[in-house]
Length: 269
Length: 285
Ligand SMILES: Nc1ncnc2c1ncn2[C@@H]1O[C@H](COP(=O)(O)OP(=O)(O)OP(=O)(O)O)[C@@H](O)[C@H]1O
Ligand SMILES: [Mg+2]
Image (cartoon, rainbow over all chains, first blue to last red; front, side):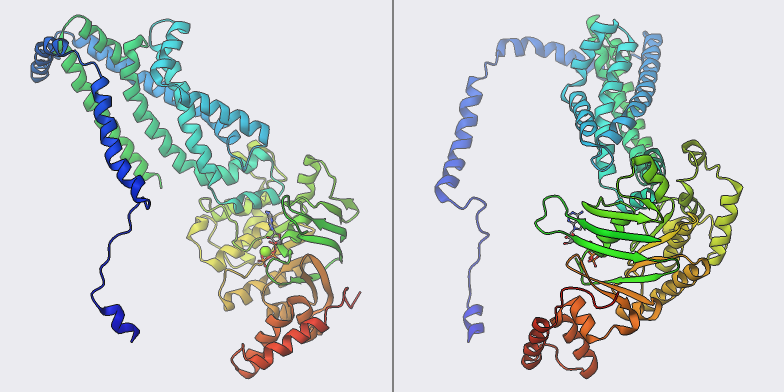
């Protein structure tokens, strides 16, 4: 009997995500309305857009005929400087991240140390690289030193945060076992923590290497050295062909870094 | 050898004590099974002894050293004398079998020596001897995660013995193993302890295993010792006291008569049992 009523062509509809029909309809009408009004408040200077169009076209044309040759020396110098900045800053960032990550793991550090290290991470992560770069350029002058300082500082937040998360998620039993043998804190880290998290942390560091190269191209624009500085100079001189060449070089290197770091991370299981 | 006096533990934020007023004495060569229902506090008791869990009351005496109240450094030195074996083996998976064994010596060597794996030759000799003794000769350079459960527990036991301990704490050594391997592992622990005259406290879920291998049994219920005596005296009455009436009666009944365990008459009977047989303190010294 039950079965008969259940089988009779019952309709079914997915229950709405927002149950209250008034709220639902209000949102359906209100959100597009708000977008429309908000767009209206944007003051778009169409005259300026039209004036810029020829230059945009000029640049697009330049992309089709990049000039690697006339500033070859500067491009090579810029690339080498960026690569050096990337490697040095990632290495420094990794070294500085290790103590911060250990301190920021709740299962290893006492509360005051934990809070301090989490604060360091938060500070490092709360500023965009450009802002840090402006600061370091002001402190250390123009050039790659400011770039290295910027990227190393930004790497701390990134690597230490992810590594600390990794440490907190590891299996606690081996740590307990090493504690039970009478091992010291350093020995516990070296014997129980490091083997468990090292492959992942190496992967995270490689990923950061990749990011640091891209960032090194950007922070050059505010004077922190590297290929970004070369690119900025090219734009300043209206040498769009050279700028196009530099952009292509950056794309190729980022792709190469992406593939190699992906491949390396894949091998680190 | 080991003496617990009025040991108690209350976890922060918890209403009830996980352990209260535990007095226990373990002499040289005693092999003690610690049994009790899940949540009775067996793991807590074992971890309070080497202070992996900090007891909130009472004292732990090992020989004539009081472990409770030791500073961090002395505590580490005292922990070297207490070997520990875990249910989930607690090996470091990415390290080799040899490294896992040598980690039992960490309390004896400095940081740099251990970091560079420069252990004294005597430690390495001991490791090879123990590997052979637990039946894993030739496994030294295997990674720990490439072993079976039984093999991993053998490594866990060998690591604990590498400490040359005065006391062995064993927390459910067989709970992750099949019955046959469980028996082999218990036999191994038993033999090794006898060879060395090493006292051991072994948490067990399996009453028949406790009966077979441990001359003495301590029953724990809701954080209190409710039985302390020979395993030969473990009868239905004692087990009811430890595990609570209903469960034990059902288990025994089901095994004996192969009856459906929730038959109404039986349920009434076991409730009556439970109400009648909860003496406040253990029967034997
Ligand atoms: N870290 C902890 N924090 C808070 N409470 C805990 C903690 N560890 C254990 N407890 C509580 O203490 C009591 C005893 O737990 P314990 O693990 O010692 O029991 P057990 O006898 O070993 O149980 P099982 O046989 O299931 O392993 C339980 O009520 C448990 O919830
Ligand atoms: Mg337990």
